[in-house]
Image (cartoon, rainbow, N blue to C red; front, side):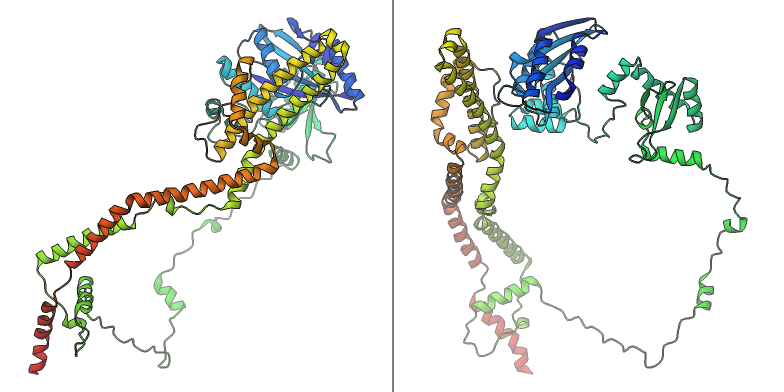
Length: 575
């Protein structure tokens, strides 16, 4: 579905748009589904009385696949709901052309008590078009704002629709297409008797068949067209336009031929200053340089001879002395810890070396491996103990930022309900309104807006719980259609989460609520770490006792050490 929007200024009036949508001569059939030409003119008069710049909002939507009139009317109602417009004041016209239908929706900018919303209107219209295609099972049409649409749908909780739209986005985004002419230029050309689409195709085909500007000018002349410099040369130097023989504008050269302005300026420069053929290069300049040998290089640049004073002193040779192995040093340190400190002769590392068998070495290696395994059990900690500590101000600022769009949505819904309730109370005080039934209608509108407010409140409270970590499941999207059957469930939900509703509605109470939630979050993490430590305490105690038992097997008895000391000192005594 292709959907477009235009805002009609108050000073322009409504005659042109009424003539286009109600008296289009090229349409096979025109069906008025809602409103009239009088309603359109009245909306423009109200906008002029309120001194508004724009009086009407024109939205045209053309589905890629056939849709019935009722389906088009329902889609127009969704557009009104999206922009907070009153459907009773809209004008909907269905055009039938070449067997297919498309719709024209006219909404007044002045909605009795507020101006029609226009914030990000193009993106919101594309979002409605994509949702309608998904709802009807039509093929999705890729747009220019698919990334923003998918992001907005995820915020609303519509994850399936967001995934479908994400599939439309290419991996490498291409350049955005440029329109060869605007819709206003198209209408102007139609009134002048010109067919812009055919002329655009003609100009593009002539450019592809030409080998330069000179042949392109000649081809345009054969079809009664000319190309000349534009009237705004001071703002866009080098810009050219294409006209017919009567001087009627067809369009810009760069837009009709899809040629960039920089490339077109190069073509103009080549046309004004043709390139001159360069003289043949001298054959001497093409010769390769002679490769010089190493001997010729050293003959031209001899190596300077060093004098006696410049002779560098010779370095002393480095003698590498044998070092003790790691296991030998550990054994010596263990022996030093066990030997009596009252010995008269201090022991050196070289005198404590003990030769052990291969079996004993493997045994000691297995013991050390078992000690390492038990030490790994002692070093274990709770998963959350290694996490970075929570920063209070940073966490609260993150929560506040995430809650801002939901608070705006809640305030907007409450404002609509409050305004409708105020109108209903005023009408209820009037006897004439009670007799004519106006007060009853306003009461129904008020009750319906109350249901919508309760539904938005439910969605916002779920978002609050999800943001602060009290809800793990995705948000349930806002339901567009609500009945009186939904009222008891919404009322019970509001009573159940009355504290959260009070916090999200009052900014002064939201900060203490978030602070208390942060404190409970920190306390819950501390409790989980403590519980983990208590649950693994027996296992760690067993590992600690096992390490003590295994280390006792690595200790060498003192008698063995003394015998080793005596045997190592005997050769010294003989000398």
